[in-house]
Length: 354
Image (tube, rainbow, N blue to C red):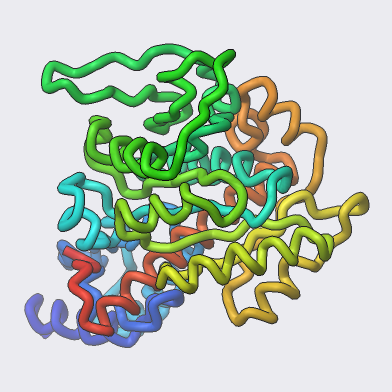
């Protein structure tokens, strides 16, 4: 068998290997790049993942190894991993900003740790190698600056008159907390909120981003509506505590996004443990037929990290909570890929893999 025949046989074998989350084979997804076979029979390839935070890379490596090494003449497999995050083409079409996906993090009520989840999710995605922006859309009560250790400082302006976001923990961060006096209350009506949220997309020099994580204020008010009207949302995450009173509010928040035709990426149960109980978030997700993304344990270190501007996933990634946030980032990234592929199959032009 000559080298071209061997190359064809390897590609044929790879067409039987499925991407575990997308349920399509690696060849039809155009994930196999630069396949070569050296003189000793080792097949070298680059596998283009849909996210650098892929949770099932080891599964794919095992399946590739098993499929290819069965071919006569192949003595081994050498895999180089790369990634190309799916692009929600509607975003650039509406706001002409090179952001591949927008993830809204919401909660039905305050006090459930939504901002803590937003910060640690964004940091964990950045740690995986993704380009991540974190937008604080809680215009009236911005907390993100303190939680990432930036305080309240005026951001610089670029030569083309755009706001340059601050960079910390591998993120680009923007918040009204950088632009307003922290001692002066913000008393704004709906149209002003809408304008501010839209300007955070159009007047900030974000550069190219794989994921924009948007931390929304609690509830189902003007900010949520303004965000959905300002930019196409790739999906929404609902954060809740386990107890029933929090679940009731989360139910309303989820229903709001469904009415706005925003895909639900899933539910996160935060502050899980002895104090607030466990399992409420998972039961709620099952009840509503949406994915359960995971639970985050209630620990003092998470709260202290938020107060001191040191996200737990950056400060102590191997702690129980740090591992939970890293696992959460992998699941969320996978859900974004699955959501965009499903949209593509429904003929929405979202440019899944280039």
